[in-house]
Image 1 (cartoon, helix red, strand yellow):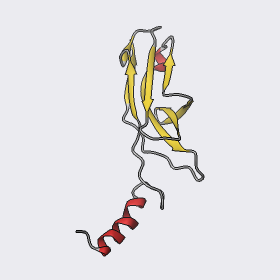
Image 2 (cartoon, rainbow, N blue to C red):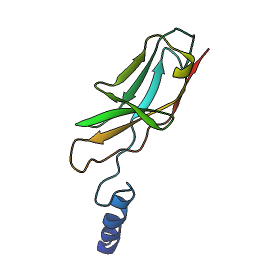
Image 3 (spheres, rainbow, N blue to C red):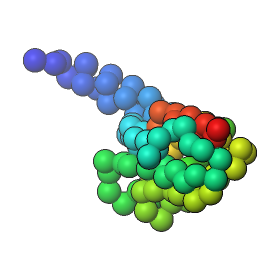
Image 4 (cartoon, rainbow, N blue to C red):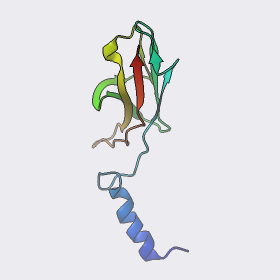
Length: 113
């Protein structure tokens, strides 16, 4: 059984692990691409970002720069150009103030050939 001191120390340490004092850790969303991460020039690809959380907004990043606020869980490139290739990731944000950001998702690399 954990001692009261251990519980007190963990309650001070865990919130700081999110990078923002007083806020809990929020795991990053999952990310995937379909039909494939390698697509033909002019082909279509859909990037899916999913979060196992409620009341959070999803954001799509390319090369670490926010490019899109997702209304749902997917972003479609209908006719891929070479410049659409790159490293994509997602993050989620709470609707509360101040906002609580999740960790970034893994990276999915889109290659246009």
